[in-house]
Image (cartoon, rainbow, N blue to C red; front, side):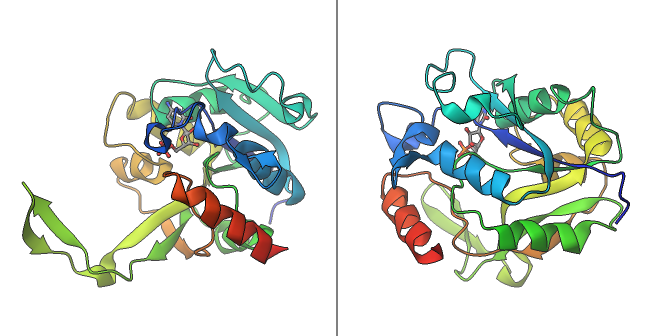
Length: 231
Ligand code: C5P
């Protein structure tokens, strides 16, 4: 590992989380005494590897300014964008004065509060000498169907199918230019897909199944269970 290379975390937290049917964005729902976002940021801070954490929040977000962590010395606030990729790009631009092209960036969803230090360090150790970078992912245990108009039109070969998780770890310069090149493309739902569009092949690092994304109301109870198990 080159000593001068820094690690940065980027947290897109500007989504509304419609599928939660809640009175506030899902990253501000309460989970075991804190908000989902506070859990996520605390996990990243506890890893003690990041020069700073750049958090993209909506400009109309009333919860972030009153969140104590928004004033933390290692946390930088950036303006969120229309899509997740726009928020990530904005968070990257917010650290441009201090980040070098070769530095590593770990992008992690605000809505994944059960991230462990084990997963962060596993990802870093696996990829730190890599040219491109890669992502945490899980292989698919279920058989996957291609469905059109409610009918199955094919079965995917699941030996080649992985579910993309976060963090996703890429070089600052490469990630920024890949996202800029892909701006406005609705197919870019994670960082790896922007790199793939450049003809690159990010690596897979097997993650832990407890690193769930809060998407539906029942996920909060599951996240609480995992947080307790991790104690
Ligand atoms: O909606 P979904 O769960 O896929 O969002 C993943 C992450 O991206 C969440 O942390 C969400 O807050 C963030 N996001 C964002 N800006 C958007 C849309 C989503 O930062 N415009």
